[in-house]
Length: 132
Image 1 (tube, rainbow, N blue to C red):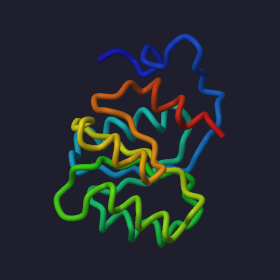
Image 2 (image 1 turned 180 degrees about the horizontal axis):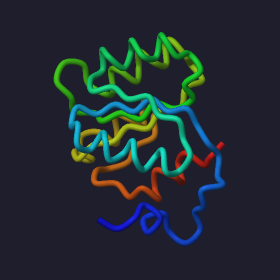
Image 3 (image 1 turned 180 degrees about the vertical axis):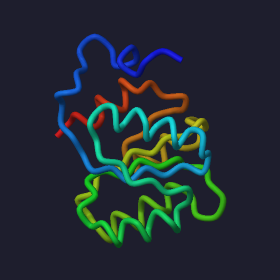
Image 4 (image 1 turned 90 degrees about the horizontal axis):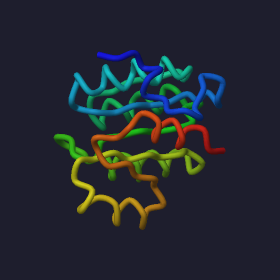
């Protein structure tokens, strides 16, 4: 596997804005890979493998700045997780990711959540995180 630096793109650097991120995905391999890349980019990552665990982590860590969540998970969906998280912290930035872009993008937009289709490029996630 090529080093993470090869996936950043020409304009991205490790000197960009650093965030405290709650990352949620029920696919543990993808979760670990995303954690590694986000750490490489300089972000602090708190991980959860389902929505209920994510809500517990969010309650315990109120200074999380960004929620990045898969949409399709057993139990509570990422969209419902995002709604509940925003009820707790209205300022929280939310990025939903899913391989089912046809079903998710419109719903995410109506809730004012950002969306990236899977598979996503780490440069696209980095661009989202770099926005103020």
